[in-house]
Each structure stands twice: as C-alpha cells, then as structure tokens.
Image (cartoon, rainbow, N blue to C red):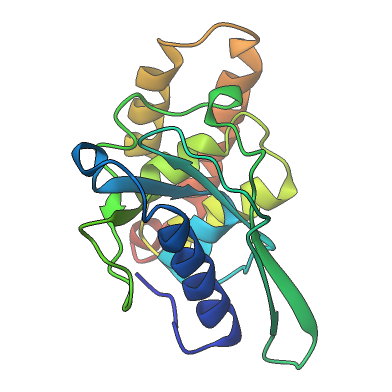
Length: 197
C-alpha cells in the first residue's frame, strides 16, 4: 500500500479509522473483528499514493450505526484546508462488483487500530477497476489508466473479473460491456509490458 500515514491526508484517514473503532467498541464479541472494506477514491489513494478523495467509500461486514458524522479537517501539501469524511450513503449494490471482491481484498495495517476489533481491508486493484466500469466517467477512466500504468491491472484479468461479475447483475449490461471494451483498450495502450516491447 502506498499511503503516507504522516501526511495530512494520512493523518485524517487514521483519525477517521480511530473514530470508527471508537464507535464499534460496544460490538458483541462474536461479531469481531468487524471488517471495513474500502473502495472508491480512498482505495485508489491507498493502492497508488495518488488522487486523494474527499470521502471514504466503505462497507462493513455487519450492519453498523454511527451517531455522528465522521469527518476530519486537514491541510493538503499546498496548505489548503480540506475535509475527509466517511460517506455514510455509499452503497456497493448500485455498481459492478465481483462477488469475491471482499474475500480477495487486501488487509491494511494501520498503527493504533486494533485488528481484533476492526480489520481494515482495501479492494484489490482488479476489483477496484471493475467497480469503476458501471459509471466509467473521466475520473474512473483516469483511475483505471493509473492502475494499468503502475502494472497493477492487466486487460485479461480485468475482462475475466468483470465478465464473472456481470453474471450476477440485472439492468443495462450492454453499457457496462461497452465500458469494459474501452477500459481494456485503455489498459493495453498504457500497460508497462506493452510499452517495453
């Protein structure tokens, strides 16, 4: 993982996790550890060290209720005031996600976070790329391109994982398949293996 936990963003991220941990202190022991799965721009930052996001898109292994907004103010490297918050409206059922995405997610060890209480996990690069195919806006394209440039995703794995994920979905699947074709062309164009040939 590429996060700098001493940067302004990193410290804000740690503070959000500390508040989540505090809110989960009273959880029943049989529910522990509660797994927190991070997606979206925060996952992108954790995997690549780039593109900070204003929010943390996350789901949990059990239903949770927070009685306060979880947000932290910090300063970016340019000195501008920023806010990072846990997006309590994030919903992973409205976009493409492989059924094994959470099983295949990566553990993130964060100093000060008790892994017996909360296990922080980040989507794998290929599952993060798949999750961006439904919307496939400019930021999504840029994220997939960055993952490919860093050698974190290849077109064959992306296509296979997305096609497997599509098997469990209903709705406008053709638009996602069109996005998948475009994403695979993009990945092939910028892949380090392709450029080095």
